[in-house]
Image 1 (tube, rainbow, N blue to C red):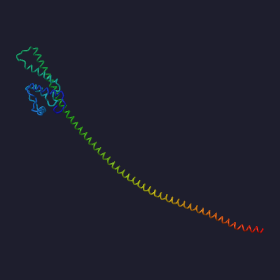
Image 2: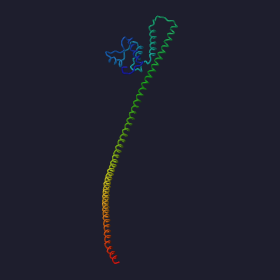
Image 3: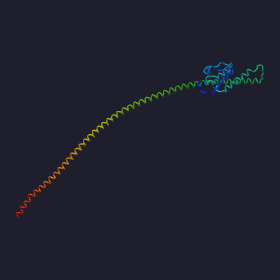
Image 4: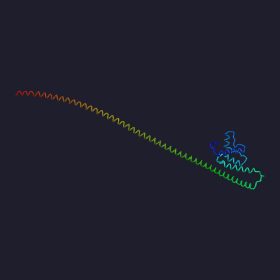
Length: 265
């Protein structure tokens, strides 16, 4: 909890061990003048023995720093405490007290049963310790695998990033090359358009000149036609006058001849 981890039932086992230690020893398991000092004592120090090896073993299993090495269930603690209570009552019984043989046999059987239970508990504790060691080793292996996986992922990510950067560089180069090629094509197209504009302008000027010449030719032809018409009109008038003159001349020539003919007759 001091390290910021979420509490669980093993936190209650730790608190139970601290209370039992204070009950048997008459002093607190961890002491400190300040909150920081108390926290440091809880995280680093181990309380001294309380005077009973069996209780020290029970309390030590409750106050282990690593939650994985503590008693994992209160049921085991209760079984251990019952065995301790039975042993304490047997030790505290008066030596002069004589028990019946049946009671003595039952007590011997109970002691044998207690020994078997204690052996079973020790075996269970040993198995639990071995499982905890195996669990620790497995955690270490998992951590190593996690490190390798992380390194492999980082390497893959670095490789992918390198490939992406190379692809981006190739794309940028290609885009730049295409941009230059497009710029050259656009320059050629613009040059072609400029040449076409110049050709169209020249053609327009030529057509304008031809059209102007054509208009001038039409004007000249219209003037010539008008002159021809005027000349024809003048010719017609001249011809009419000539005809009139011929008629007058004929009249002048023929009338005296007729008169002479009449006179002769």
